[in-house]
Image (cartoon, rainbow, N blue to C red; front, side, top):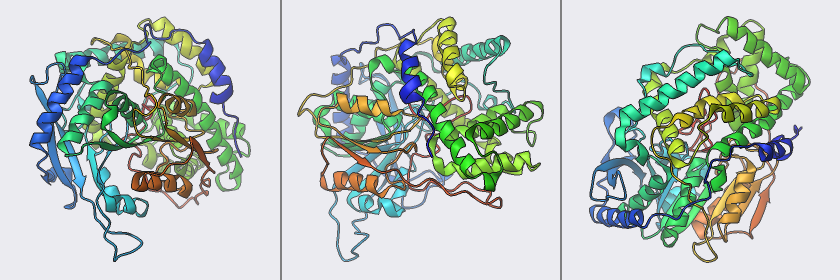
Length: 555
């Protein structure tokens, strides 16, 4: 069972034909002033260290988790100017061999993790060490997470009042009318204006280059001569920036579900590519549902399943489920199925139940968690600021309209929702950067490990190939015929073995290796009302989570 991969065929041709490549996106040399500022800040951080202690009570952290802070410059061109504090978390290496209780495992150092976003926090990451797949790493490494600049307690960024995040059930037309477009343009302008008004002159400093510089200061504060790092999704992009800027500071790096770092793709074209790729993954989901027609009754072909979905989509426009779930919430919920196939059973069951008159499963999955409004807005603000600051974007609405109208003809599932999430960048009021030309030469950095699933929609596979090409000596491990976003220490033992061998022993295969895809999920019976927890991967649903009106995990 596999639907045709739209992105790999039609999608590539379409994206090649699209105009509006961001002007001047050829890459620029990193500023020597900022590199000097990073060295100053890193030396200061090394001297100060991190005073780890109990985590704040309101964060409800287990006692095993320690928290601390590290100061970084707001502006690396002025390292002695205004400082901001990043919050950091740690669980020390256990030294316990999970396969031999009598053996004491020597410590290898600190492993720093970022789950992506932009706008995702890794503060809870160190707790992953209790999971079976992670115990060998947890024995050898201090597991370190942190909230990047702008996120949570790390100089938090907001662009609007959190109460504005959840506006109630909303329409999400697959092919929006002109009036709908005008309404969304007005909202995008207001959001961009809110970011500028609330952050002021600091807004320009929330960007990927500063995230990479912050990572070097964190390395120094941890007392590490060289960095061992694992980044997922967007974390792979600023991880690659780090390898380009600070090659002599790299020990080992794992890039899980790699973003395309080509300057011409950052970020407008990457979002177009993502929307195209989601159409193929949406088809995968529908084919799986069709194969289990006897369980769900939604149709025995992908086309019939689509008609069932469209029927629900139309009904929610007229009457939101439970008064809370409209088309926008439905879209967000099924978008998650494009990220993680272990979400497929719960989504299919909810759709089936709704069409049989029971809206409760859908409401349980899709109703907004209003208590998380501040967290949602903070994450959205950082996502927007980083992507808008990182690169030039088209500033003419006609360009967005033309490119996405064309794309939506063949990839309607996610295209316009992705537009609405990123449209504030058309009206951004802070200076734009030129993307750094990510690349390393032979011998400049130790070999890096890149992981990718062939059918990943959030970070299409072409991005992993481009990352592999640009980072000399890197190794690419591919999970074949699979589409889960974030594959390290998930259900594929073959992938996990490669990660273990690299991080624990420094062993890598030849330039490329492949693992067969993990088994597809089994259908759930109607009485199962919860998502299965994705405990194997710390960057799931989101720290790095898909949102209403956008596929935002990838970058």
